[in-house]
Length: 247
Image (tube, rainbow, N blue to C red):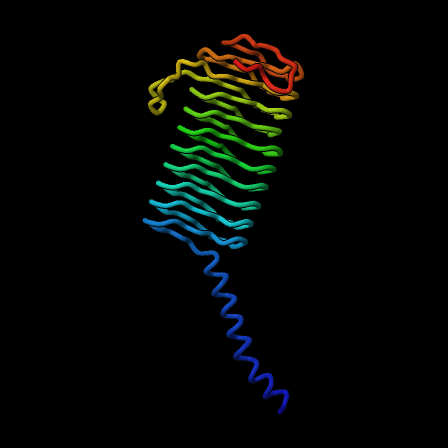
């Protein structure tokens, strides 16, 4: 058999393999859009937009997607994902360790971000809490209406804001903006004000560069090792234990 014949027989196989790879790459970078049913994004794959109306969205470790949105369902992503804007109306958002995302927004659901994650913009929830674990960075604001906010060992370049939730700026965190507890106004979604005052804790070695502004009654605890800007609307109760006093 001549070399020409060998090459001639291999050529169709090589072409088929190349087409299969190209088709796979095109599929991996396609949109997934549904009305009813959940969306599954495979680990390590690249997608454009992931969306559904009635269903949750699950994103495997190391996957990449441009925008992720659902109406009735949560979004759960694994470790090392890279995402654009992530939005849900009725559902929670959960990202794993070392996640990257442009912004996170939920209306009726909490937001939880794993260790060493980087969020390029705001994290927002109306009726749900927000938690950012150690090593995180948020280049925007973290805000809720009805929901607690907690960060540990995290840098936030914007503000932390709530109306009716507790705030914990945990050990080693750095907030470069303000910490604000606002009062309800006509601009907010309907808010039922709790009779209990929000509890605000500035933990050990935490830093808040901007002012602490309280426009309704709060209970404020500031660790003796923490540093904050000017405080208005509350009197700080100092503490030096690992945890703030229980009420």
